[in-house]
Length: 114
Ligand SMILES: [Zn+2]
Image 1 (cartoon, rainbow, N blue to C red):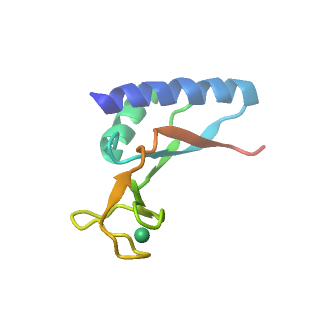
Image 2 (image 1 turned 120 degrees about the vertical axis):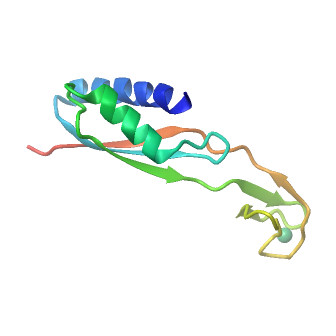
């Protein structure tokens, strides 16, 4: 299961940062693309399960899903792909190339303030 592996990675990274900062993490912000899209609920559930009893227990996960992007072949405008009709909002052209999907990234960890 994809989400379980992601949850495990998250837990390791957040724990490591928590040790470095010597603080309790309360929130983690992450983003992912469409093709590697994760199911938010499944990820939260998996994270909650494996973080029980650790310093990361109770960390809230903010997950942002970035849209797939395309570049117009005509005017080079970059825009978010909305299926099923992919059309440049700038010039109306329907020729496009898909840009690489956004990777799964842990963007920010918020720690409890003293
Ligand atoms: Zn265009």
